[in-house]
Image (cartoon, rainbow, N blue to C red; front, side, top):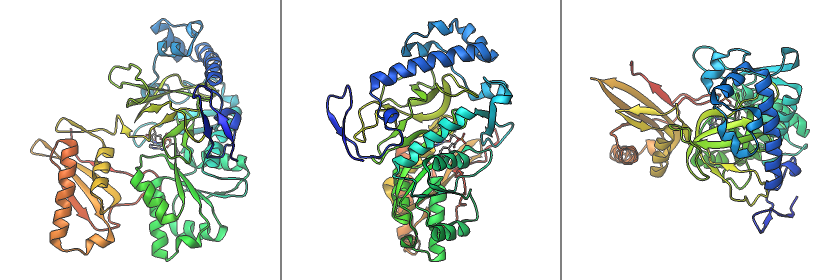
Length: 450
Ligand code: DLL
C-alpha cells in the first residue's frame, strides 16, 4: 500500500509509509475524529453515571451532570479515576455491565495486595483484538505471517491481547507465553516465526540464549517485533534490531484501560499513535491535575470511549509521557505519545532528589560500552540514602586492563552525577550477572526500611 493522502488541516500531502489494518479509522480526518470522540464520550459518561454508583457519586461531588458534556473540552470538568478507586471497588464495583455480559476477566500484575480486576464484554474483546491487529499490521504483519506471542498468558493482558489480534489478522498464531527460552528459540526456528511479541527485556534475553545455543539470526525468519509492557530505550531498540535482525516497534497499554494496543508505534519510530477512536488521552501536571499543552511532559490520563465492561473516566496512569499533534508522515492522524519516560510512582527519592530509572539509563547510554542491563540498588546507611548502580559491561570491555575499567566506571559515575545532581556508586558487573526476566524487567531493589 502506498498512496498519497491529504490530511485535513495539515495543508499538505503526506506520503503513507506504513500499512493499516483499518485505514478509515486510523487515518480519519481530525475534525471527523473529534466529532466521533464527542459522541462516544457523551454516551459513555451517561452510561457510567446511570450504572456505576462510584461515578454518580464522583460526578455529583464535582457538580457535573452528563448533560454538561457538550464539547471535548468539557472532559476537563469530570473527576479523575485512580488506581486506588479501582482497589476500593475490588473486584467488580466499577463494572458497568452485569456479570452475564462479561465474557473475560484479566487482572493487573501488582506484586502486593489485591490485584485490579477488569472485565470485558464480547464487544470489548472484539475492539481489543482490532487494536492489537492494528499494531501488528503497523509492524508489517499480514495473514501470511507467523506471530510468536511470548508475552505471558493468563491474567496478564499481554499474551491473550496480542493473540486475539494476530488471529483476527489471520496470521498463524503461536501461543508460546514466556519462559523455557531454549524451546522458544527452537520453535521460532522450526515454525518459521516472523513476528515476535514480548517484553523488550525478554527479546534481549532470547537473543542471548540464541547466541549460547549457536543459533544465528539468519537461521530465523523473524522480520519484526512489537515490544512493550515496560519502559525501554532507543539503545535497547538498536540492540534488539541488530541482534535479531528485525524492526522493533513499541506497543503500550495497561490493564485498566484495555491492555496492549492503547497506543502503538508506526515504522516512523517517532512516538506511539494513541488509538483515539477508542481512547481520549490527556497530559496533566501530576501535582496540580491541570491539563498541559502538546509537547509538555506530564502524567498520561485516558478516558475509554468504547469500552463496555469497565469504562474508565480520566484514568490517571502514573506514566510520564507527552502528546504530539503534528501530522505523522505515516498518514495516521491519531496523536502520538512519547515513549514512556517513567512512572510517577517509579520515582525514587534519594536524599530528597527525584530520580527516575530512565534518567540513569540515558546517562549510561551516553557513555556506552555497557549492556542495557542495569539494576538500581538503594540502601540507607547511617540515615543516609545510597544509590548504587550495577551495570553490565560488554564482553569486549571485561577483558580490558583494570585501569581502563576504572576509567569507565568513573566516566559512568560522573555522567550520572551530572544528570541527577547527587552522588552515586557505580559497580561494573560481568556480562549476564544481572538476573534476566521473562516478563517485565525488575530494575530497582530498594533495601531501605522506612
Ligand atoms: O503491561 C499491558 C501490555 C502488555 C502492554 C503487552 C504492552 C504489551 P499492565 O500489566 O497493566 O499492562 O501494566 C501497565 O506497564 O502503566 C506502564 O507503566 C507499563 N507499560 C506498558 N507498556 C509500556 C511501554 C501491560 N510500551 C503498565 N513502554 C503501564 C513503557 C509500558 N511502559
